[in-house]
Length: 153
Image 1 (tube, rainbow, N blue to C red):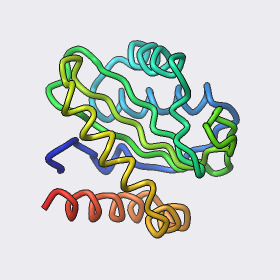
Image 2: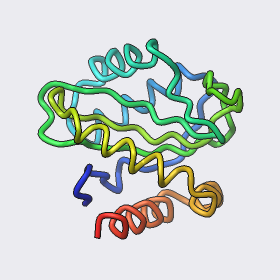
Image 3: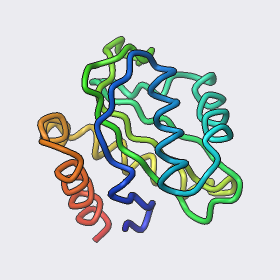
């Protein structure tokens, strides 16, 4: 779907969670179900990265990410939360948009380029507002894929 990472429609949705741990679990489960990966291993790797410092990006956005053996290219998932949840973000604000990224273990620059692209997209105020107000998963995916495809061109 993108030169930088794959985001499938099934990897996009709205969830209910009441803690950072619940968000990370649901993110790992979504990655596992959509991309055929092991949820337990994913959660372990995502939590390992989170212990290095919160991936709470600020302005209500988190970008949990990890490197995983066995992947051929970076893959992504996007979750909108029904209600904001504390995430230890740098600005102290709770999170309601979560953009997860998994990259191959050896994807040094590719991982960083994908994170940078996600970061740019999530910093855009218009995009942030559109994602927050989208009526459902299909609309969320449409917004994300249009921006990703546009930026890749």
